[in-house]
Length: 569
Image (cartoon, rainbow, N blue to C red; front, top):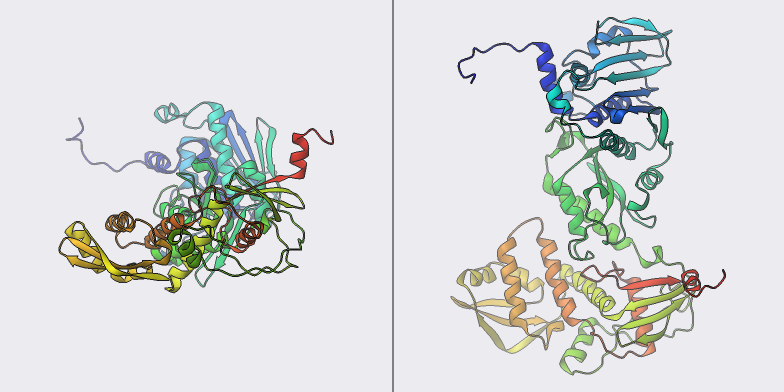
């Protein structure tokens, strides 16, 4: 026990080791700190040499502007930096590295050698943490940092390191995370003096595909939006059938790789009506924001940030991703040429379709639109219907198979969402109100959110302390059992309340309505109805998936079909 021990001033070497414990977990942490310094030095080429998974040795060589020889000894001391001079600098950090104790912390747990040369120097200068003396040295313009014997002086920390192969994997991942945000910098990675990876100077998109390979599809959704204080760019997977591993999600704020639940939720929320089950999108997102609007000094390793206006950032990202998904059309996926011979057919609204099909129990037509004979049709022309469930269509590149219910569901859903936002959902009034009993607190919710229910096409009012009356409903729901749906809406409303996720919840309710109103299996369609559905899909946002994230269509190219039949071999 040490309760009665006197209070003492800690020596510098122990203070440095404590600081190192905050930012240096393993060899990859050292690489991260050194790379950030190289980037801040305007380096164009960076080489990273790793030995023994980084446990034995790490060397980082850059061609940046270097460190003047009279500042080398300061660089290894605690709380020294060229990036923060006053309190205003601390609240407006634009550099990658800024914690002045990084090199001092690394030096306290390793054997360190620092060699640097500026453009003004005739030769390089060298310093190490053995004698801390500066000596003339041969070297090019830039900086070389060599560290070895990592954690040798702290056996308790050393024993927590994993195998050399595991530590090497962490080192490479760290380098890749940084390289993704800096495509204008060339990175070379060496393991035991043999090059294992190299990323040449390129653009953002090519760097992403180069590093992530099969984890991000080539035909991805591109996102870009900006305003006076923020800019978002990047790519997202074009469907949600992605592994749930977090290493498929790359998020950067001002080029700094971070983890942020709020932003990740905004991205997942935008995918909520095209994702299936627990599947989540893969993405690489870059958010540039006014440095005054964030605090990056909230975590020792700088992998978290705090936003001054989190809700504004959330809504900005949600809108940007939603717009990107909506703009990503079928035309971006299927190769196609012009089709002709489809004649103009009658227009019919989704509400009219639903009334004909649910109320009269007759086979209805698809909601049709006018078709331009000269317009390109990526989904081609219908040629048959399979088992009353699938439409078979051909385009110049092969065969398209469409799930009729899923496609129709998405079409109705998107139209309902637009109607909801414009407050123009068509409704049907009951001759006599439909009443049902429920909990008193639910009756209070109905009264509190009456306007919101009206926007969804429902007129609900308290009928008694423990009952609710339904006066009108969306026309699409005529013929359906309304009471369970309304109760579900109220129960979910009770659980979610007011929040930034309210629009997502509204979409879920609209999705439920659309699912009830879309065509079912074993529904025979005429050829013009099938072609009309294809044209509607081509004009509908997010029509690649139904409201639940399942695909609405698949494409078999002629090349794939030929291969199945062993043709051309």
